Length: 217
Ligand code: E4P
Image 1 (cartoon, rainbow, N blue to C red):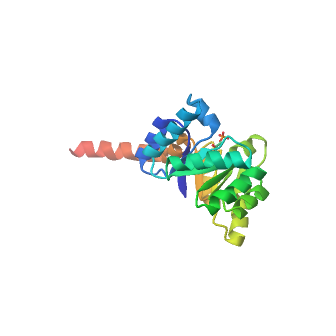
Image 2 (cartoon, rainbow, N blue to C red; image 1 turned 90 degrees about the vertical axis):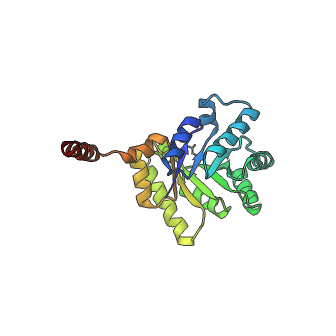
Image 3 (cartoon, rainbow, N blue to C red; image 1 turned 30 degrees about the vertical axis):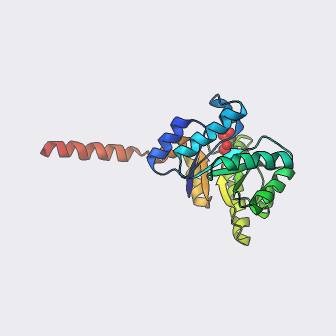
């Protein structure tokens, strides 16, 4: 399972990279705005800065909602760095753009996916990643994890190579449950990854080992 962090915060990206288990980064316009990154030039420079920190794929989202605009923006984003994955919204022109970029060998991430039918279409278009938003489904009393399971079954039925990128992850149990179902990738806040570290018996055990060592030394 690949671990991505879902943030545009460079310190958090550095911390995740330093841990040695980071496979990539996802961003979106809201995450960019949260960091105060505005204006085309600043946004493009920020993507370049993220690519310098991480080794893996970095999803950069287009703003255009028409095919020509998405192609124009996507090509500009892809030219920034070979690590860039063009993030496209799950709308008709987004699917057309995913097919276009796939034919050109440019990686894509189809985002804002909330149904198995949408994920099927993204796979047919040859998307590299599909991003089902599980936290936002949970927010409206719909089982987000069930969507991951449905997509896994459909993709396995036909051997689709599109990777299931479980997005809108809110906490560590989401990460674990996505791993059990077989999501290819998770993207979430750094805290959802760091939560995997924690167990009180680990802390108690370590404290005792160190105390016993001190007794004899
Ligand atoms: C995915 O790529 C999105 O950036 C993200 O996971 C959205 O998560 P949210 O629902 O916490 O905003």
